[in-house]
Length: 120
Image (tube, rainbow, N blue to C red; front, top):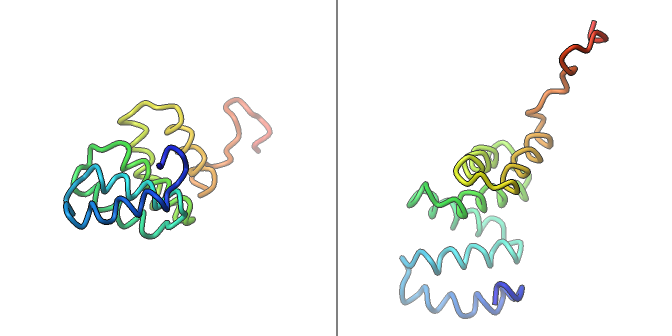
């Protein structure tokens, strides 16, 4: 359902399943994905924060947490998660997310290029 971009339908199935198995990590990851797709960003952030705390090595959860925070304009909070996910995965898309958020948050300075003598 999520691959078909039907997060509301997915949540209708996931919620009863999670009521039966509240600790099921796979179901919780799917619920977080559905929350992200529905732009229920605080709910996604809450779920993903718990998932990352439970398993700090989960690259998908960490990257998704960073993206959720980014979508809420919580850029400085997003950066550590995005950086770690990029370092852990080596995924070029994760690296691009880091660069995008660094630029948006002003972390990257607009320093002159090396050898640029016009900098005074």
